[in-house]
Length: 204
Image (cartoon, rainbow, N blue to C red; front, side):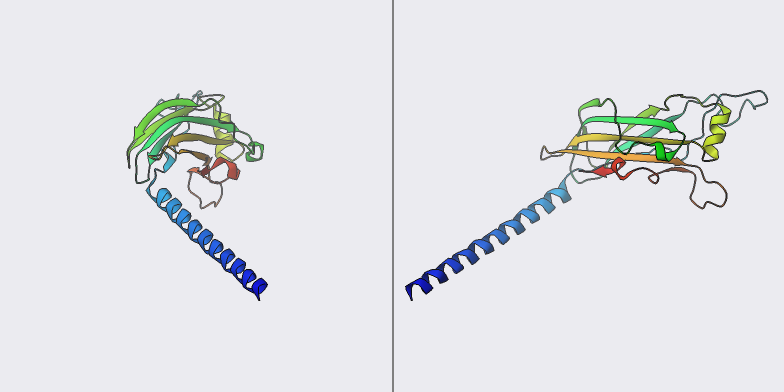
């Protein structure tokens, strides 16, 4: 009888511990949900969705031809879409030309991170960033034609490191491919997130 009673106490004690653990997990999840709903969230978007391609003019090109002698650059907006301020720590931005999307590395090489020195970004505010096309800022006519025919591609990528009001560090990774529609392609011309490995876009 005593053994059965002792065993019952052990079971009851275990159930009490289990209930307390479940309650603790629920409280932790609620706290995490509240923190995530109130924290800063940084997104990065192109300022110009479909910029004109800059090219080196040749004989016969009009003086006012769109893109003539224009430097190619990717300009983006770094915006706080959360509910509390953020402090920008650092960022990186790359703009590249490549012959095939299959040649893009599965893991992005962000390059050198440039400091923001804890720049305060209030809710709804944004700052700009810019990167010139590498390895050649201005394209020649054959390169432009190759891009327009999807025989070469332009893509931009990078990341932003920032802190929220809870002093937690977060990271936003972003990547865009300049899509050039050919034939009956219904997708509009301009930067979009398709065509890059999943490692190029994400947030913590």
